[in-house]
Image (cartoon, rainbow, N blue to C red; front, top):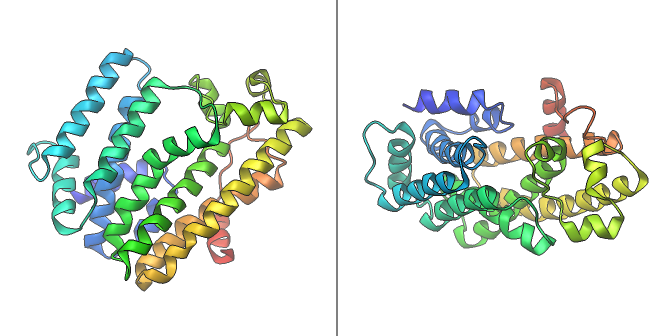
Length: 273
């Protein structure tokens, strides 16, 4: 079963896959289960072929399944693995509920008025994952670790939003806050045209500085972790920071080609963190 979930993570081309391999097997399997739930929620929320009401029903069914844990349908590999993970580790149920709530936002919203509004979305879809994973890592001070893990999740999601502007536009979504688009003078027509203007550069640098601040705060998690868990977190955080530096180096042209690090680039990015 764990091999099936590992294959799911690998096939998703996730920046996390090789980082997870640094964990001992029990922790790795639990993290795979959390990630598999993320993928299941995303798949429902992003299925444009389903009417909004069907997506809502699917996500509400996900929430009901999480609520029923540790009971799990024997044929559902994701829920069986998640039941095992929640039995072994103190994964907060509220974090899993928040993850589903983020999927509901994706199924219903395509614009965010302000950073405060977007931050709540990021907390649901990424901060919640940080909290769930932190419980698996087993920090020396769980109370202090939780907020830092959540903040690191926010940083990674902020970088995702910057990287995926073009892809999200093709899905009819704009995650960059509307107030900030207005403040920097970037109309949505520029996103549609893939226009890299001075205004766009200033807007994206503002986003990058936010990601930097969140990343620095979130990396306060590292001293609270054992060596292998810290290496795992350092690896994926380093890769995301490398993506941010790549976007900066390209003048925030995320339209002509999607930011992506080579294998060598990932190693260098982790070493530089």
